[in-house]
Image (cartoon, rainbow, N blue to C red; front, side, top):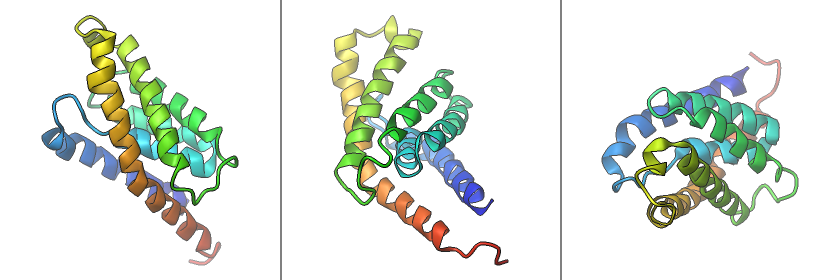
Length: 165
């Protein structure tokens, strides 16, 4: 139960940062997607079930203030990222950013295809060069700090004795 509360608090903190702080710091349409980064990182640490669950909650929270496709895209990216759990070394600093890069790239393409705002107002090559690829690179770089932090939190939760109040 403590793990759920901690992860819920992390998602609420990300919601506050994503909604209030990042729009002021972003450059045009380029904005990091902490929901996707955290979803992919938790999926890499705990597997596909955690990726789908955290992706669903993250997508729901993101859709409360934005468009309506994140509730489908984030769980899918969490599932795909979670498929690498157990196949990579958890303390690796190379693979998590690469997986976040791939998930951000794929999620960006799907977002382009399902949003009328992008599909009818932008060409695919423009979106790819100016929104999707730069956003994926920013997410991958931020993953270098987010993944070790989330892994540390997971390890601390495992060290806590069970049944001790």
